[in-house]
Image 1 (cartoon, rainbow, N blue to C red):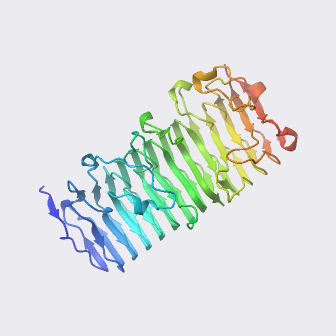
Image 2: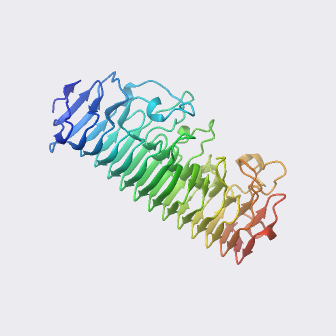
Image 3: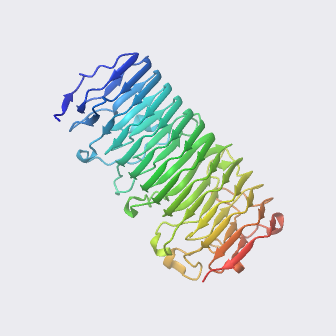
Length: 435
């Protein structure tokens, strides 16, 4: 099949149905959906269509869609041909959206009301295969993203490679999609500080494998459900992890101010980082998730706690989190790191925690605790006095959990200096050693 070279040859109408040419459509500049387009379907040819970047492609994305309404993009492949791009890039300044910073994306959508992207297969995209910014009523389903993303000057991931919803995307769904060999984050909601939060979203029934940063990150958002996703080898390959930026990989991550959200029924295997990070998470629930690691401590150079609560965002307080029926099997350090108040931590199974055998193993596995907090890394559940900001653990309910691992019979639930276990309800937890 001969490729078809096009520059401005593809002219998409403002409404109706448009079928892309069959074969390999090689593009040197952006294919643009006209501004103001509405009730439009752009779809691949039944004989097969691949939209491929030409050598030296110049543009923000192969396909750009701005200020349109009710557009469907269906049934074709996108090949970014990233092998020909030698550029390295770090992160944008904190006040610059990713859509204005990165070029060489796959499909870029901005200021759009009503978007469906379905059955599109992305590969070899240098930046973000699909980037949606400042849009509403977004449905992404049954897409595939493989072998995408780029690195910074140190050779680490720069967050790119997956699906990004940014700057206040609302009423969205990401469902039944597959993400494989992604350098950075696979599915990510993000907004700069001061921008609208992403809201009312569902990320469900997706699968992830070989992800260099986070499988899923919910950033600066409200009313998000993350359900029934599965993944393996999160934080791989090791050399892609942004250790200089302290961006430890996570199965389900959180950042910014996130509330009224639920993470439920997600299951991961072999996580070289954290299972669930709740940095900025409050007034929400974490229910029936699991992470299972079968290796030894040395197999997880970036291993961390299983579940971590943090409070880096200045606009939130860590309060009212329900953490129930979760399983952590094989955490390098403790099962949970907790700050804040009025959390309910019940019926969790924290098994084979402290693989690193802290603090006895000393510096070998990074078991050197924070000065003045000797129990930090050796506890099953650690009630801290602060994370990024002071917020002592208090008024917690910690009941009916099973905690096993290195010396867990004596180090099951421990508190930082200045934190009183008596200020919390702690009862009926089963704590056992694993030799």
